[in-house]
Image 1 (cartoon, helix red, strand yellow):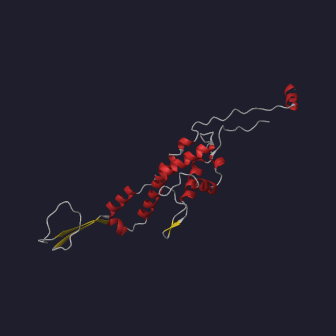
Image 2 (spheres, helix red, strand yellow):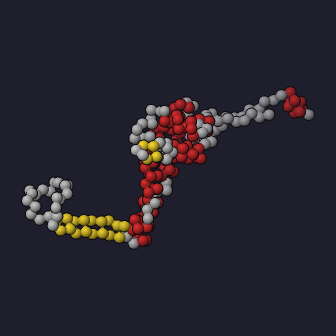
Image 3 (tube, rainbow, N blue to C red):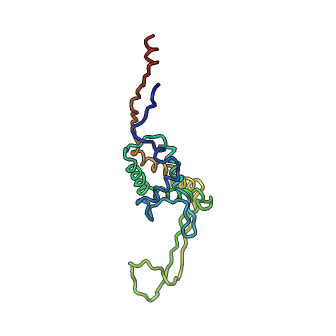
Length: 201
């Protein structure tokens, strides 16, 4: 019989075979700190956030589930994963959030252009200054300019803003943590007396 070939290191699914272990280990690591932690279904300020940790695990599993890790030290591999999540995770989440809002815009909203309001106040009795950004206490007249985009231009601008590769870029950061050129160990054969007898015939 022939022994099954084994890779020199564990696979991603050997390290984390379900999302619950992945989530709990990440949240208990020193790299899961306020302001940089990927949301995990928690409620804060009356807002319940999506479980993006579960989403990320599913994405990593689909991309790297059966890939051998590049580290023999599994603990170091985990910290490398968490460090990438620390560095790139918050931006990934924000891009997902913005994309969701952009896709939810109505046609009227995407066709709405810039709006400019010009106020003028004459002889208000104060010393002139060009270094202030404070609004005027009163105005004598006001001019308003409102632009509206054509439907074609509005959709073209929306397509430029929508990013379909946010997750692709994030997932590509984990590629270096896995073996690129996989070289399994050479299998070996175990012979018994019956094999020897059959070989002599």
